[in-house]
Structures are given as structure tokens and as C-alpha cells.
Image 1: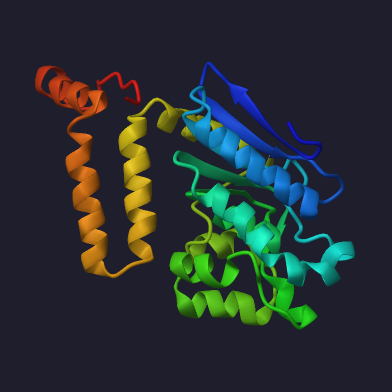
Image 2 (image 1 turned 120 degrees about the vertical axis):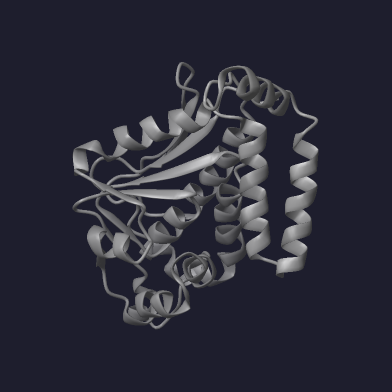
Length: 256
């Protein structure tokens, strides 16, 4: 467990929360980046964790890089990107629960998740352009893949803050809830995924994310290999047998 980032596991729901806790605004300094990477590795390999929630607390998700380290960030971009890549590659469903600001690196942190749930008062943005620089932790790559090139450019070029409602309208945010309910909603949905077929969910995530980085032919090959391999899993055997005997939605998966 790190000083500013910790993995909290609820074994009853099988949901792990990667909790960012560096008051007052969860600035992403080099120590936080390293601890985020460690938490991602821990969540990936922990058999008690079936799904993950990224959570910055009730007041703010993450307001970006630590300005005191800004002059050194250019030489540490690989470390920053590496930490976020580790989060993006967690082989489980990940939901970012966002309240308050998710700006700069904070917005890029939210982009590493599969889904983003936002509070009504949340604000998203990539304000790096106002400093004469650009996003350096995946914003120019993950954002256009999520919302499309033109909308990503509007966010990056303007540097302005986008409300939760605006962000949902362009596909940056998946669900909007009252601020005091965001974390609970994320936990509820994550718990549903945690009870699902973990091996198949991991394969689906890898196929979708991997396919976005290659051409359609290579993506289809990736999909085919994953599809065929899943028939050898216990979950597939259980799912097929349960469907035949009881109908859909009644299988008891073991993530094996």
C-alpha cells in the first residue's frame, strides 16, 4: 500500500477500489504515478478482485500534474505514460468514478478506464494547451479513440473545462449521477461485472483494445484466436450447459 494510492478490496463483492488520496487536489506527482502503477499491477494479479473502480474521493478525482514538478515532467513522460498504460491494461473491467475536477493528467487517468461515471458537478478537460504544451499521458491518443478526432481536438485545442452533461453528450462520460451517488453506482455496476465470466471479460477487453491499435484484418484475427480459446475454459462449459438447461443469465461463473 502506497502513501497516496491504495488498493481497497471488498471480498464480498470482489470489487477492488484504487483509491487516490493526495489532498487537496490529488496532484499526480512522480510518487503518485509510481504508486498508481503498483496498484494496477496488484489489482491485475489479485484473485480476490474481479473488477476495479478508480476513485479520487468525494471532492476531486485528480486535478492534473503537480505544477511543482512541471519543469521535470518532460524528462519523465515515459514513466507517466507507463503508469497509465499499466492501468489501461488491467485485465478486468475498470470504472472511473469521477467527482469534482478531472483535468489534464486527471482526465487522462479517467481515460484509462473502460467506463466513466461522473457526478453532476464534475468537470473534465485537457488544459495543457494553455501552458503552451499538449497532453502527455495518453490524451492525444486515448481521447480521439473514445470521442472521435474532431471532438478530441476541440477539447485539446480549447483547453476549456467540460461539464458532466457535455462530456456525456460527446461520449467521454458514460453515466451521470448525483455527486454523492457516483462511487456507490460505480461499485454496484463493478460488482455485477465481478460476478461475470472473468476469463471472457478479459479476452473481450484485450480484443477490443488491441483491435483499436491495428488494422481490421489483424483485429479480426485477434478476435478469432480469443474466441476459439475460450471454449476450453470452465466458464464457457458452465455458460453453455446452464443456457441449455436453464436459459440465459443463470450461469455461476468461476473465472476459470
